View 1 (cartoon, rainbow, N blue to C red):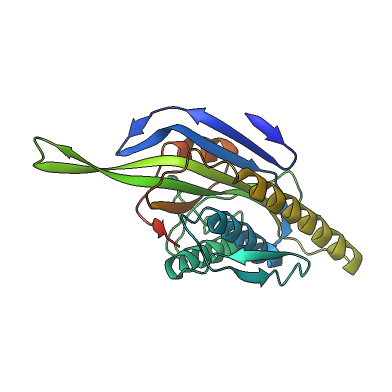
View 2: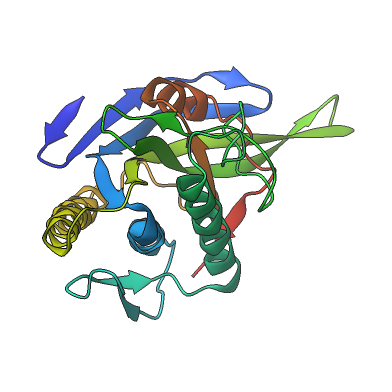
Length: 249
């Protein structure tokens, strides 16, 4: 595992197959540093990171559309303003916001397989943090390629999903309100610094493209309540394809 400040990136060599999902012979995992954020600002923070990852991994030219975080006006980012992609991000963000507000109850985002449920469906994917009044979760963006393989002399075909890259975003959401304006400003400053650091290293990590397929590919956004689940579960492609979106320019 290669480490840099703010992000750990690694190349994994494997060829594991399970349930029609395989990991590419050489695929990459990127683990960002934890993003601490207040519950009311989690949507801005998550949207910023998801759009940045998807924009920089779009397989072709995308017309840039700049956006500014409402909660963090010093941070701007590029929107991946493609219909299905934007809707997918919006759904993931709404679900994650719901989980942040209701964190600790059984009515939060994710399932045992890491899938994002339909908005408002009961599930479990937020764990408790060591920080008082905080809940932690992991958002995972998985990129994979679909391949159709023929069998039985071409009379039957099976779809295989090959994972070639994933991004893990640890988020700790503070649900208890800050005691003072000064404390709120301090928390917002910590979040802004964490986001700036994450954006910088996303832009650095995406320079590595040797593992990216030439053909069009899909992505899925899932959540997990522990780092172990995020690394193991998404490595084996749990739930991939059920709600995936084709990433197109």
